[in-house]
Amino acid sequence: MLDEARRGEPPRMGGVVEVICGPMFSGKTEELIRRLRRAQIARQKVVVLKPFLDDRYADDHIVSHNSQRVPSVRVESSEDVRLLGMNADVVGIDEVQFLDAGIVEVVEELADSGRRVIVAGLDLDYRGIPFEPMPQLLARAEYITKALAICVVCGHPASRSQRVTGEGERIVVGSTDHYEARCRSCFRAPIEEETHAKDANVVAEEMAGIAEGGRRQQDA
Ligand SMILES: [Zn+2]
Image 1 (cartoon, protein in one colour):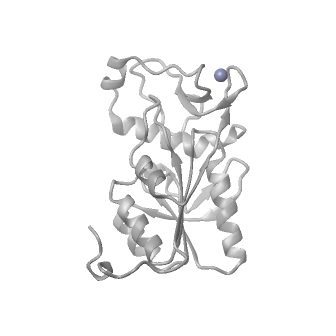
Image 2 (tube, rainbow, N blue to C red; image 1 turned 45 degrees about the horizontal axis):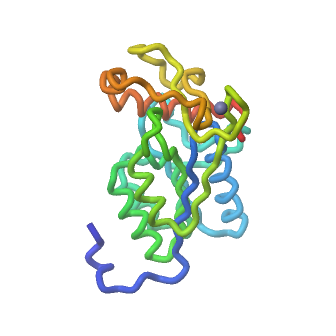
């Protein structure tokens, strides 16, 4: 759904899309904060957005594991991102994988209008399957940073988020010890029936909770 006013208009200069992706505990938020801070120091107008998933986390900051924080605004949809993003030079979005598919077009639109858009999020879910809409964003981005964590089993670079709870267990959102970083060889995908039994929203909440609380674990 391209903005009518934009059709036929050439994109403005300077717009760019940057994606920071990787598993849990890889320091994505830390990297996002680092970039946003530098833009703030340069007196650019920065807005930081984060999907609203659960009011238990209705804070107004994004926080990295080393307790760096920047003020953020909770958004419920990609449409919110469009409206808030239009008022800034630099638009940062954390946990972008939890926004609706419309975020792809919104990010493009913001960049086409001359803005710098920096998004961070999980590229793979707990099954090791690409987390939409992240692949769409990665394909359109000018700059991609793939952050890696450290595999808790073998110590090699970790690209996967391993779910380590018993089957069917309902998890307290925000608990940190139900996921851990794993490398390709140590990662074990969940068995198929467990995957289907699990409500997708529950998993999304869990992973969001981890993204909040899990930063106490050391990043790569
Ligand atoms: Zn490993």
